[in-house]
Length: 98
Image (cartoon, rainbow, N blue to C red; front, side, top):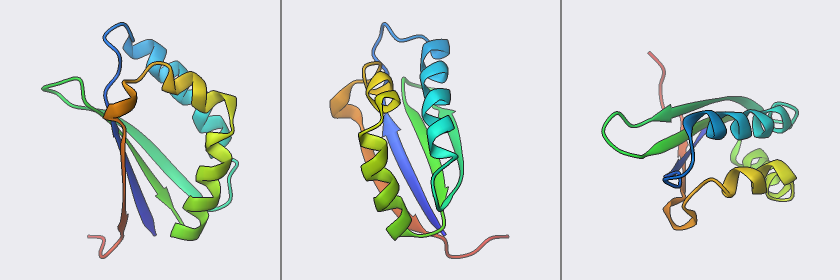
């Protein structure tokens, strides 16, 4: 299993409700993609920091889904609410579950 962490900051004018609304549109698309397991949206308690925490079956499926995602209009709608240079993506292999 692959965990994808997408760290970002929202524009000061972006409300939490706006962000969740656009994220839900994106998740409707993601849920239909091969290899998608789940996603969680979390917010830092101390700053304007957000994370999407995705789980996928494999890195190969992440790459295929990422290409499709960037072409989806819901992706652009969400990106309009974010500070573009704040977006950072990283990938991790699952080692162990307790």
